[in-house]
Image (cartoon, rainbow, N blue to C red):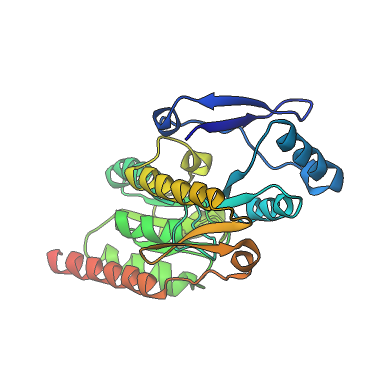
Length: 293
């Protein structure tokens, strides 16, 4: 297998570079791709098709989310075979239980929160950490469990300021614990305002941290490297079998593929059980603090 990377150029024409092997990809190879407004037009789409034909490209494996899959579908209809691979740190693609990049982003969040907690503990503060996730709270939920967050606030679940935050902080304070960590998904919004409200209401010095694009970079974790390799292999095999307009997906522990049109219609299911576990663990932690107090 050879890997081709397309680089953006000012005139819209991309140069092609051939990688020597997987090792170069695993070391944070950057594809230099971004959304293109021109591609959404008939002219831009035809230019993309002509470019593929002129370069002798027989098929494309497109890595991304729903927007990328829509682009793959458009190219497929123009005669360029395309296979999609789900890749987004939000883990918000309906057809797949897992998306490449999610585990790497989670580990980055854990590392950042662990570092922030050092100051939170030493200064007896409340730290609010905003992580990515506009419509999907998986990143905040999973990372929140991993770091033992006091609260996890996500778009899928409404929360009450007094009941879910202030009452919990008041109760924990009675156990002599004086530092708190709250994870918030960006889709909830109002992180700065929330920090001010908590400080005004409790008198606890409260700071907010927006992790931003640090979550989108770095060296991939083992899980993402292996899953990316497995999905990539599946995608290439589908192309070699003459398949087109498909998306590779993980369902449970099984690797499957769907027609792109079918995949785009699938709705993501929120993991209610995992959320309940997160809330239970938070209560267990409070009870342990109370016994120690």
